Each structure stands twice: as C-alpha cells, then as structure tokens.
Length: 505
Ligand code: GLU
Figure 1 (cartoon, rainbow, N blue to C red):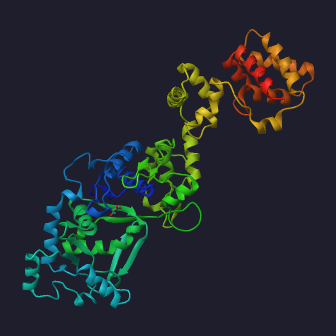
Figure 2 (spheres, protein in one colour):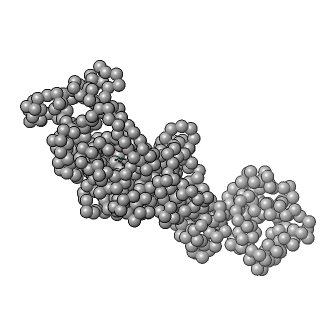
Figure 3 (cartoon, rainbow, N blue to C red):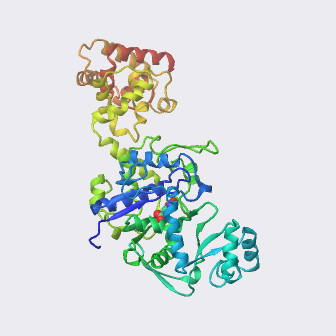
C-alpha cells in the first residue's frame, strides 16, 4: 500500500431500506479504514430521481448510528468535500462532462426511446457501441451545426462514453486479483442526462471518488461489471495515477439453495433483511428489522463481519476493536457467503449471556413495566442472574420469568402428560404441610428440608419435583426450583400448589 492516507466511502443510493448486504459493505469499509488509521465517508448517490425514496437517507443514517459505525465525513456530518449528496453537486459534474466531450472520450446522443427500441429489434443482442453508434443520431454521425441546433431547440440528449473497441482492460481487485475484460463487451454507457441535468451513477461515482480522494473502492460484487468502464473513465480524465484500488465483496447467498439473498427469503424463513424496521412509503408495507427483533448491534456486527471474511483464527466471537485489528482482504473469500441466519441468533445469545447482570437488568426493566409489573431493581437483577443463560433475545426475558410475577392460569398439557403421576396430588398435599412448617424459606434451607422429607418417605425425587414445578411455574421449565420458591415466598408457593391441585385432576 502507498503511504497515502486510506480514505473509503460508503455510497448508497436512497432507493429504499438499506439491505443487510449493504450494511456488510459499509462495515468492511469501516473495518478497513480504521485498521489503517484512515477515514470513511458517507455519500448519498441520489442521481436517479426515478428511484428516489423519501426517508431512505434518514434510515441509512439511523442504521449506522445504531450499529456503532461512525463516519468521519459525509451527509449529516459535513466535511471538506461537501456537499455529499450528489443531487447537490450538479454544477461540479457539468464541468467534467464537458471535459470528456472536449477530449473526444464522450459524445452527445439524441436517440429517442422509440429509436433505441427499433435498433434493439433490428439487431440481436443490440448494444450501443462502436459497431452500432454509426446508425444512431449522435454527435459522431450528425453535423456540428445540427447538433447545436437540436440542443438550442431544447431537444433532450444524453452524453455517452465513447468506448474504443477491442481493448483489454485490466481491473486489479484486492479480492479477485487481476480481472481482464475486453472492451468489446462494453456498451457506450450513458454518463449524463440533459433532461434532469444530472450525471448517471458511473460519471458521478468516478468524479466524486477522485475529488474526495478515495483510495479504496470497497463494494458489492454486483458492481464488478462496471469496474472496466470506471477504469477507462479514470484514464479519460487523466487520473489513472490516483485511481483507487478496487475490492469487490462476495455476494450474500440464500440460507439454502442457489442465488443471492432476497427479502423473500427473510419473509419465508422468518428473519429480517434490514437493520431497522422499514415502512415502505408507497405501499405502506412494514418490514421488521434486526433492532426491532431484539438483536444487539454488537452481535449483528460480529455476525456480518464473518460473512465472507474470516480472520483465520479458531473462534467466532470478536469485539469491534478485534475485528478492526484483524481485518484484511487476504481472507475475504471470492465465493459467495451463505446467509446462515441461525448463526445470527447464536451470536445474539452469546453476546447477551456475556453481558453483566446489571446490563441485562437494564433491558429487563422496560419489559417488566410493559407488563405492569412492579419490581425493584435488586430483585429483577437476581431473577436475571437465574435465567440469563437461557436467553437468545432480551424479549425472551418475559417468557422465562413471567411466573415470578404472575400465577399460572393454565398448566402445560405436555408437561402434565409426561410428568404428572397418579400419586402427585397426595404427595403435593403432604409437601404443602412440610413447606408450611419451614420458617427460613431460603433456597438452600427449603431444599435441604424437602429433600430429607422425600428421602424419609421413599418418594421418587423426579416425581415430586416435576409435579411441584408444574403447579408453581405452570410447565416443566424454569431455573432451580428452590430459587423460585425463595423468591415467591412460602404463602404464594403453597397457594399456587393448592390452586393447581383444584385444576389438574
Ligand atoms: N450507489 C451505488 C450503490 O447503491 C454505489 C456503488 C459503489 O459503491 O460504487 O450501491
């Protein structure tokens, strides 16, 4: 690498919710920049007014805030290269379009959609290029006067790149190595549209990457086919010496089967493909997000970081700082990365159980409030310590603890079928008598007394404890039984057993 300061950009188009693949692209940009003490900027590529979706930009910014990916400059932050919204950079691009026209690397074309369609019909596999542009209505086939007249008359035109045929173009990619593509397969891409006075993605992207001193272009594999044109544009502008290095990231694949991950896979298999909840402003369709599903941002970051890259170490859990310290393109795979969403759950579980009881209690308190439960923080924290190991998501907390706060109103059929014995009622009546006589209802003391009573009577420990649990908890689940009864207290425990005996026959 040169000694130039690393500068990368994430350059989404605001065409809807940010897809999880885009989040990974931004993350790799961030990891790479921070690894090299560099900078990352956020640029909004909104030159395609037809696809603009209101709210998308705010959504993107909020997503990264939640994930802890901090941009050094860009939309919402500012910086020396402002504005960072391409729609606000019209005048800048005009100058560069003219430069290409003057140097003969681009030309003006007037072909109407109907005319283009006719050309498409007439020629199989038609593309507008060195072989076909001679049939078009453009500044290469029309006289200078006619071109000027048409423009003066307000005719809408586009500017196309003039790609020279039969030239091998080399793209050096940090993931894929050297990729060589012959210019014959490229078409004369539209670089500018007079109709909205805006460049297309290709031109705006190159001009901005140059002006913003971008050193590395890290983006999804779907942009690889555009790279040869981009290499040519750098050359046409005379910027080949400072051309950024490319790195095209592997596709995210469906969890099962072939093809790339789509929103439909998420709907079908029940996982989000967006970082945050998204309401489509046109259709009103609501899509859930990782945040709303209860994922911790650091778990999602860890999961996404290892989709297509691995640090070559024999473990899965890495702090954000470790990901930064370890990141390199050497271990980014060329092959697509399967979106194993179950693994995301696993990550969340790991991150959750590694939080302190205090931290999980902070997540627990609002859940308790939601269920109108009054509980002081100390008690909540103690309950958290009992159930933490079972959690995948903070929202599981209620399911794992509701019986501490609410008496069961129903008793799980499956548990009864499996664990309830004909002698259970009689034994539980006897148990109530024993419990009633205990004055120190702490977990250890109650356990010692009950265990001795079980032994003295020759009962089966499993039968007693399982039946007991069903009456108090409502199902065969939950932490250590005597930890539960210690929290509930003697009176509540006994009355739950009695209430259950009325119901379970
Ligand atoms: N605006 C493009 C996108 O939406 C950027 C592609 C690139 O990074 O060059 O992904």
